[in-house]
Length: 455
Ligand SMILES: *Cc1c(COP(=O)(O)O)cnc(C)c1O
Image (cartoon, rainbow, N blue to C red; front, side, top):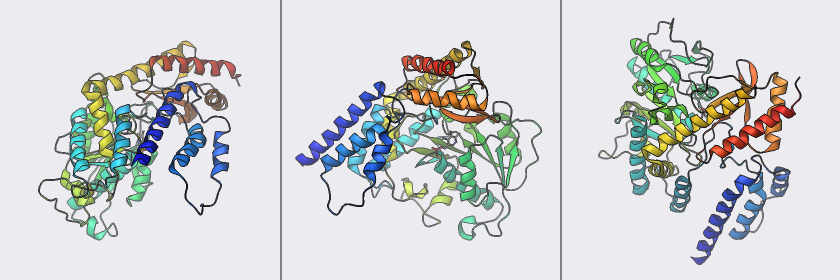
């Protein structure tokens, strides 16, 4: 198929050109690019098809300039990691494979790689080897997967079969969250029929960590949700006292570790996440700190049967032999081969490279915080991980500085709300971020601050 070979070579060339150009272009979309793309897309479905080479050219010419350069080294929004070269290349090859990755029957290759990838993830984080995993789209669906298992299990212990009988007439479940729980958790509680509002909310300290004193009495079906890595401050709920308390009440402990759980991969940072390995379920992302292409999240459940009870297709699915079929442990049936990228990323980093990646980002975040403080700018959090929360005075001035930074295009930082006031959040989470990127970004932020009048 010489035509396909030429086409894929063209795609690879364009992709490499795109990545090489990231360093010299603004991080946001190029001026006018989004408008041009929207106008060009405003066409009815064509009667006749087009040539694939031309389609690629149109995408590259019109859409590449309208992208956000989040694959580059100076994008600090939304804890968005880049894509490690090995993971990107694996993604391209797996795209050619086009495997339906629901199990051994549909793709022995991906099923085998998925087993290996999950084993490595558990090894990297020191999570229980017997825990069962699901590769899903992100932390949101990982929450969904874990909390479905939790819901079914705590109700089973109360004598209720939610799988067969649903939630009508079921015993009530107490869901405990911290006051700084991530928004996606509430969306998932609503999707699972547990309700966004009917949670027991525990107070937090200034960094967003649940206060482990004066904890309420818990009894009956209960799910306690802890957070390893606050999306603003990067702070961790203190797992040791909280899990001890949850265990006394017989609760299921679920962890939102979207990016923070990767601290366990570094001896330097693991103390932040002390105790988290004793939870019942963990939801986290691979597309954030592990730097694989979107989309990629991981759900792990310590008790395998709790996951298979909740996710099997037939209610009581028995796996053929001891082989793990993904569709018996995930909400999806047909799905793409996420495992290939996760495996490639871990293979390319190794234990050392992963620890080094986490530690480098934490060091770079500290450097940014130090540079900002030296210039008299308020760093609002204790920079324990890769997150820096910054204030520039009033809400209006903070918004103005963020807009100036985004317009300037040297780096990209987004806004957030921290303790009720507007703030800027910097998340250092891309493999591509060099120390030079940090210095260039710091200079751009300091300049935006200087150029913004005080209000
Ligand atoms: C990003 C994030 C999520 C949601 O993850 P998605 O991959 O976007 O679904 C949940 N919790 C925390 C703490 C996060 O940072």
